[in-house]
Image (cartoon, rainbow, N blue to C red; front, side, top):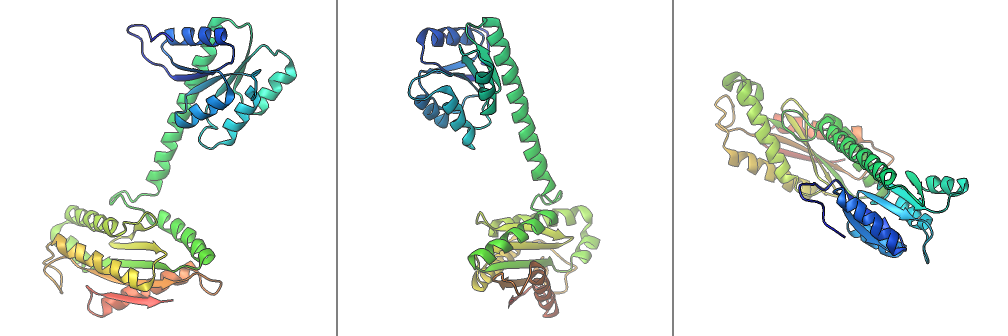
Length: 316
């Protein structure tokens, strides 16, 4: 296969699957000369293996091949979550309507009959690569939008919406696996006086630093740190008993103390502190996520009543 011509750019990664070598060479040459990165294979098994290691942007697929025909190759590609989005263009001498219908039915995006015209092949490849690139851009934009919708704009940790969704999800997991689910509520002590003393910009910076501390202690993949509202934060800790949740709460308070954020308006410390309420349960038919939320909230208020900057734990 000849390299792209001087000054050209690679437009896309195209795999050609054809057991007839002259056809393979012709397609490879004309696509390479137009700036495409081209890989050629001569049978279905090799194609599937190559795609699994390095998925191309588009596949040109012959139908009549020994051992595994193009229909079966396409069927397997479309059955695989990792490869089902790759556009497949069939190229075949089979020109019956039913052949084309079958090709589209199993996931082909186009069908070119042999003998083909070079310009036709090039235009169809260009069209479907353009559509694929637009699809990828749209998927990435949608993924970013979903991420932004679940983030708190100020602190960049999970927001209340994401918290509610995740608590429901982990509640079902706890019920199914009969493993403990821990919920930690924490509140910045005397935050309103802090804002009044240092100003809202400094207050916002304080919230961000507390959020970062939460993310540090919520270090397992399944843990979730969230801003619950105002100066109140939450941690969801799946598969965590009361002792483990209490250790996380203590670690969080240590992280906050290490920040040494000055708080001259606090009535209990010259530095910023947190009150922490913890509730733990194993989900079952006799309680609900709302009940766990209520008990964690009650534990937080008990911590405040005890003088703040402390931890209260309850088992539900």
